[in-house]
Amino acid sequence: MDRAELVDRGSSIIDRLTTTQAPPPWWLVVATGVAALVLVSYRPLWRLTRNVVTIAHEGGHALFALLTGRRLNSITLHSDTSGLTVSSGKPYGLGMILTAMAGYPAPPLLGLGFAALLGAERITLMLWTAIALLAAVLVKVRNVYGVCTVVGLGGLVFAVSWFGTDTVQAGFAFLGAWFLLLAGARPVLELQRGRVRRLRNTPGNVDSDADQLARLTRVPGIVWVLFFGVIAVAALVVGGGLLLSDATGVCIPVVSGQSCPAPG
Image (tube, rainbow, N blue to C red; front, side):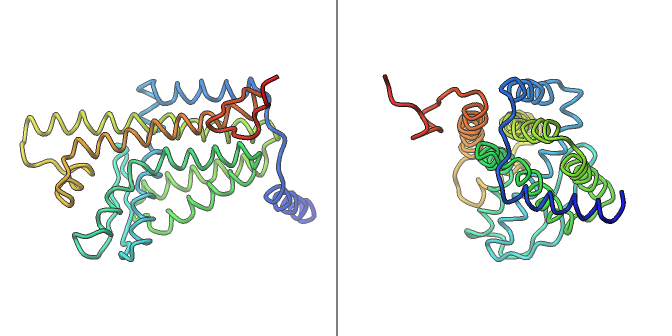
């Protein structure tokens, strides 16, 4: 690719960031939803794709640490798909509560945000928003596996947005949004199963996000698990409606509002 072609491609990306793109055919929206469901439900694939959820989860902790005035020290991502975000500040209070609370809701809410962009036909903007968020996370990643994971995912999104055809970009964008929406609930279920197992084996020595929040707020951990689950389900319902209503022409009043035709 020579310099003129590079400038041309860059100008095209900038133009697409500020304009809308044609919605993909309905079958592509449905097919990417089915593919995302397979990525979430099939265990061998989930062991790999869960890394994406971990990045979003730790990014949620990191964002609220910064928003509440805490000092963000590091993000670590592990090959077993666990992660750790370390921040400095008071070990109690609203800032600590919001920081601890932000992890599990982050993936489904991010999926909802992406669905809103795709529902507004902003496919390129959605892809480049993902690149920007990954770059922001990368700044604080402090281990080799984490750097490789974030760079690899960011490179994939960049390659699709830079070299992919309109159909490829749309398919990848809808797959990503569907995946985050559908993947929001499974970590919550895994969280509760892990809590039950650890409470049975080592009572009083459970250190999940829900149990950390229970110690900070004196609200039982199971209530926080239910809170995370409600957010995941609500994001899936609304986000799924946004993805389906525009591309398929199916009017869903909850998310379509005034775009629904009046009764005949």
